[in-house]
Amino acid sequence: MRRVIYSRFGEAEELQLIESDMPVPGDGQVCVAVAGAGLNPIDWKTRKGLGFAAQQIADRLPWTPGYDLSGIVTEVGDDVTTLAPGDRVMGLVGFPSGGGAYAEYALARADELILVPEEMDLVEAGGLPLAALTAWQGLFEVAELEPEHKVLIHAGAGGVGHLAIQFAKARGAHVIATASAGNSDFLATLGADEVIDYAHDDFTDACYGLDVVFDLVGGDTGHRSLHTLGEHGVLVTVPTVTADPIITEAENMGLRAHGMTVRPDVFHLDEIAELIEDGDVRLHVETIYPLDAVVEAHRQLQTGRGRGKKVLRCQPTYAE
Image (cartoon, rainbow, N blue to C red):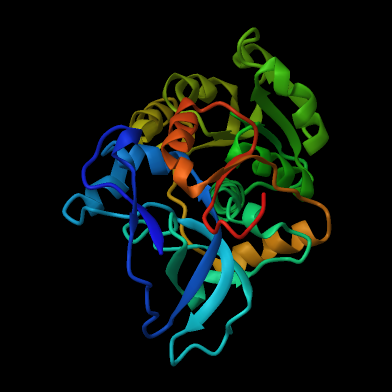
């Protein structure tokens, strides 16, 4: 079988596609023929040696990246009773130090996986878990978003952002999102009540008294967003590299701000799958790359541009 590795931190060219032995599931594990592996910002940041995940794998290179996967169970460990060969599954696997999804076959713990709704394309499903769980946990666990709250979501057209808009609307919130002018109509179809063109309009002029800001950009955007919060509002900032200064500034202003790190949770993922089954949420996959185009996929991923998700098609037998 083929899998992607990198032996040192660096640019996208460090990614190599190699031949490898088939993985064999141990206790509590299953082997999955990977249909789709989600491409996420943490993937390129870790590849460059940035962030908390890179610190955990620095002495374990070469390493196979990828935390999102979908596919077909091919083999189960002796003690696995919840899944069987032939099951269509998806999950956030091996997070943060295991990884392994950029491969034709990968191991995952059975308790990391759920069944893929029949309504979902199996390859595209690989782009859902990490982005969806980040949006879900950020909005509902950390920010405690409630119906009628006013929420500002930065980078609304991105992988996490386009799902966060839909989750917030499903909860009954009033949703404001920032995006480029070209994505305004796209966000409207997702349910955004207001869209702010970040290139031409200052969101701090348009927003005030907000209950929640969901910051997927960090840095200066996070700092400026503090000025849009109401007295009891809260900002959740996702990029870890700039979280601490934003949180400190919020404390100095007498406001609340929190960082967050996503975690695997099959119960949350099941709730999200139900919303997809009911037609209340849809995953938008912009581009599907074959596994041997992983270098180009990472180059595009690193630009931060695009709508929704990018996914690797890991099994050549799965058509686009």
